[in-house]
Amino acid sequence: MLKVLVCVSGGGTNLQAIIDSIKDGRIRNAEIVRVISNNKNAYALERAKENGIAGTCICPKDYGSRDEFHRAFLDALREAAPDLIVLAGFLVVLPEEMIKEYKNRIINIHPSLIPSFCGTGFYGLKVHEKALERGVKITGATVHFVDEGTDTGPIIAQKPVQVKEDDTPETLQKRVMEEAEWIILPQAIDWIANGMIEVKEGRCRFLS
Image (tube, rainbow, N blue to C red; front, side):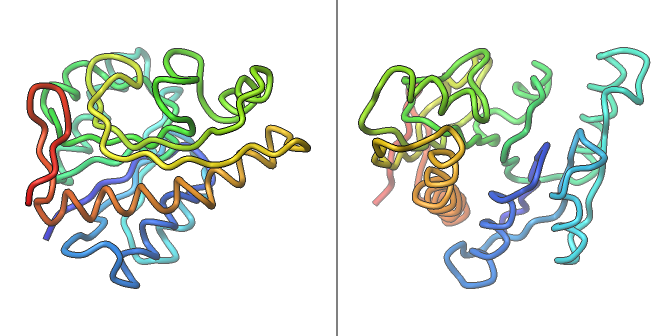
């Protein structure tokens, strides 16, 4: 059974998609052992509570320095001993030590088709605002492993979503979540939980 830890900063809609997918069997051989948020008011923590999942808030403001926050964050991760860490809208720059310690065991969902509209400063509504400014006809979402860069790790899955003429950043964000994020994030977790992919030479490879 794959032990999954989910990190989230906000409402937790992707967390809910994971919870629902475990319940209905779309994610096999996996369980969520803990939810960590950097935001005391994140509704994701309430979602965890409602589903009997341990939830923890580790807020940078509660610590005297970034190093102290990172130590507390790493301590919580080590205590939970996850096999896989899922960043589901987690607006925190990960400490390098964590990325090294959990190499190829951290995945992230990004609301665009990487390499478009990704990297430093591209998160949340900002991604969709830029996509609309550029006038793209197709956007989507990407699940990838996390490395030392920003949105640069090996790509696991992508799903396209059509952009409509009357889209606003908010309507586009909602459709990308519904038509892409909530589908490919659970799918990626299922693949990992069932030994269906490996990372080789910086790329994801599917195992037969």
